[in-house]
Length: 219
Ligand SMILES: [Zn+2]
Image 1 (cartoon, protein in one colour):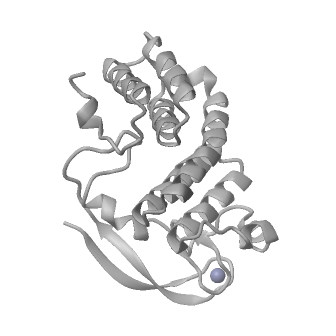
Image 2 (cartoon, helix red, strand yellow):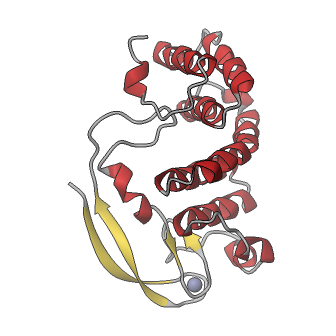
């Protein structure tokens, strides 16, 4: 069950007091998508995953907590002009920009992908595809920085997500090549390589539709 409430929070950057919707608990039923997007009910709480101060534009999982170096970024032109064409996606891209600015490339990947999901929900097909293309560089950078720990759970998730991003951005050759690298990685878990086989087959069939991890099992 999902429980939410309204709370008055004080922005850690500008001190403005505003009401925000706070998620207290949620649950899931079903399978995540191939890019690890959670199933319902958690899926439908996406608009509560980050908060944004209406006064200064600071966007964060919790606006009442200051992220290191946030003020300078939030006041920058580059931050203020971020526009994904959708309010929620723009908020997530702002969180991603703040993560990137403090050297958290992995966090930037995560929030950029969440922004993609917001565009999926808004049925902005072209916008979502363009943002997936933009996310590819970030994911590659995050994975390169953790080459030495290629098979940690976090790295495995990012590799799975990158395969799905390639496929849903219709970058077929890159999707197939990336999937093959996952399949050939004999040190990786079996279910991970099964997901790669499924993703590879979808890419070969030019299928860019949303698919779940459950669909990949047993293939
Ligand atoms: Zn503020």
